[in-house]
Image (cartoon, rainbow, N blue to C red; front, side, top):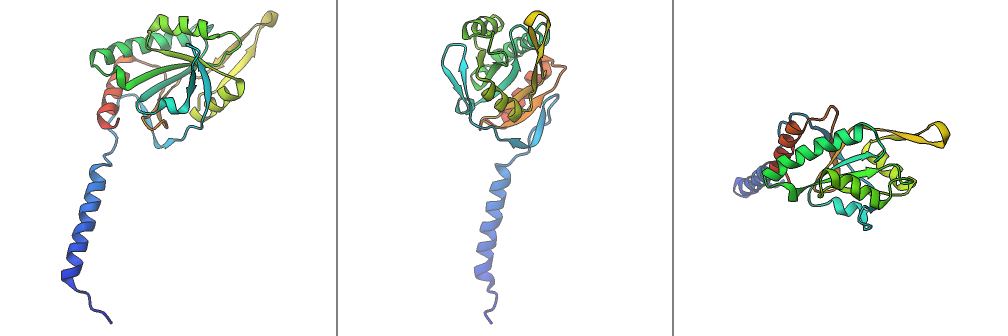
Length: 205
């Protein structure tokens, strides 16, 4: 039987230890956050194709390389959507002062493609900030994104053939690898959200 030779084993053990140490260095735990809720495991987002407010396609690959805040609503929304976008405008101002807006994006995805044309979406989101992007698409594509991001919505028929849309007030947080890493749950407040994004950007980008 071959004997254990310490002169051979020690260098190998040292190499393993260094490798494990290197893994720990690059696997730092997420920072303590004020309001953002991170998932234990990021959620994979399937491929999709929407139409942006400038007429160009918005696809899953466009979410890579930066953090993206995704909100699903509609421009005829009387309360939640404008309130949320006003909060995001304040958050964006804080990120602009910190010089971080090139590493974050805000996407407003309309779940009302019948009324929210690209022109209307552009006018709506750009009133809050010209850097915000509006997009919409087919019922199938919107349903796919809604299920993947856990941002449900439902068309509610109204009087005289009209309708409204019940939808989530939650913001999805997409990481630089285009997976959903967590959410901002209502009530939304710009200052702690901006603080959390700054911590996330310092942690991983």
